[in-house]
Length: 499
Image 1: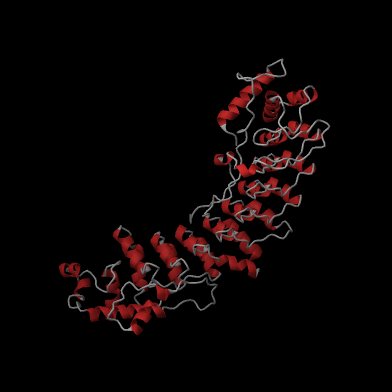
Image 2: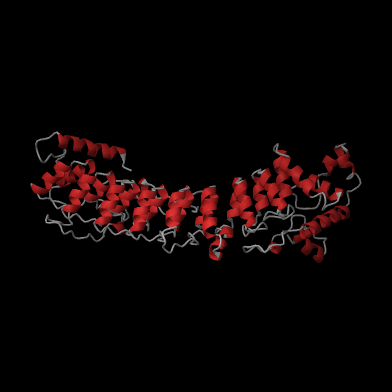
């Protein structure tokens, strides 16, 4: 991508060049400004969540980022490859800046005749650089000018020359899907795995954008399919993140050692990326191809650094069919190390179908999250905002497990209170039969007995008997139960705190 203002200026100069009989034209101030901002296609490895990810971002992007055009001082000094050209290849800028600029403008605009004229008559260095260390070949490849690119290569231009960001001609051609130029560069010994200073290779950027033809070319020329950016992002992660099934297939079936269980610095895996963005076709493909690989199966329930698992993310986002697929693989439905359960996530975001699925698989609606709230509590808050379906369903699900008194107590006690009381003022002023059970239950002892019944039910609710892949849970004893009272015995308190 090119900055519009600067590019228009350069394009106008190119148009003047086409219509001019003179070889050299000065700017109004007598100097050329170079094409510093001609190419705006650099890599940002930390746009992810990941990165940072925020929890729900996709995050990692290699798309152009204009903020990276200002190059850090420590990147300004890099080695410049020598060229076998019979033209001079001095790494310094041409003494005539205007002439040097016209050479770059000709490459940028695809003006082959001007390129030839400048090389033969003015004998410019074929790899003369601008302020961003770009060569004419870099510019021609970035804009997809095949004939200009071929001419420059045939006359000795360095195919592995790098800008200040570390980007090469192959990287730019791959990022813009200039497939013929990618093939041309590879045939002329372009280094396939040369990365930017952020660690991104041509395979990364082509995979991110879904250019399967370019990916196939790079893989066929022995690109490292497990290469990692500075934040440990792989090409497979980028393809899974953006839903490019064909690219995923090429990478997986490349007959090369691909690291399918690699984790980004924030703990995200390729499988997590596919689940997070709801790409069910990729999920099905990965499970089909790697479903018998014990190492890969660990990624199905691998948590991110914040504790979220693929199942948790699917529950949060409402991907019902994906949730069912993951539950088949015994994903953890209990408290995660983020202090929440999948049922908390589904309830909070009002996904009734997923709540039903989780209850069928043994999820416990009485588990306390890190705030001491259960799914029932969250459903009550949701009900107060007009959505009562989940609350009604959960109360029916608890009917075989709790007495009528205990269930009504769950329904009517204050959700975020720190003691065992419920709002007696509401009870006193209500007439429905549902409340009459509480008319005589004002003592702490009576309320305590209901708390103990609920705590006991929470501890014995059945869960699936199959062995689950679990993640480290927080120390639940360190989280005070929100109904704990100082008058309770130590034994009762310990039982109540157990999720």
